[in-house]
Image (tube, rainbow, N blue to C red):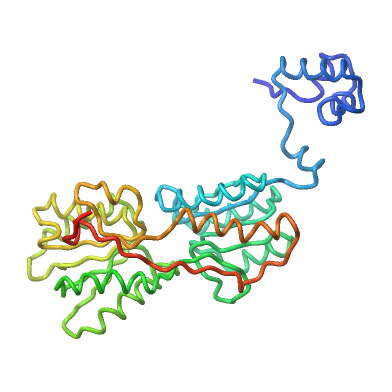
Length: 338
């Protein structure tokens, strides 16, 4: 079907293009009867104004850009919901780019945000480089990091103490008497994952009789978790881990499923700790112990940090950064009760 344009409305209403523009955007410049007639024709034809033209007239896009690592993970969905809540209160909308664990996709989203002239960006980085972020800033687009910290100290951020989170998870397993531990999931090139491992290793190092092995995965999905769980279940009992820390709840739930399908009891033989505490963690077949991150609140607070730069042109201050502390939610996957 042909897209209906302003020329079509003008032709059917027997007026000029400028008259249509005035009737739809500046009705005080035409008579009420003419404005009503043009609107009626536009409605009958199904005319929708181009967003780019509206932006040009208004001098702003009314959009914030936001990249997330993987929107399939409910953690990031909740983060987006929190950002949208704050943006909507400021009469702004959020354009979301799903990096999908792919730096090239992330880069493409940032370039798109630049082209559509978003008024600010929220970045939950997978591999975004300082150069890519600086490119936006040079064009007057302010940025706030979410679920990450700017190593240069130039950008404000809303983050989570992942070192403490990794430590908390391993300390919990050690307190349960587990000594052959595994840290599973993600890649150490992702800052959040690397920091969790730092905390996990620090906790394990405090106990000479504790072994902590590391297994990286390109993706952190329940399907990969299931394959890993089946593989771990097939290992000799004295070789497989008796405690597992994962980098997200999707992976953890898949591992639990694979372990049970492979004939291994959870938590009696292998205890599993997830990360994020997504809603499904509490209602899984074996409710999952998890390190809770307040995803929705993190997204909301990040947008609130960004808004003064967007609405009032204020300079963002890295000193305004926010760090949330971890909380361990103990459930049946490590022997607790939900």
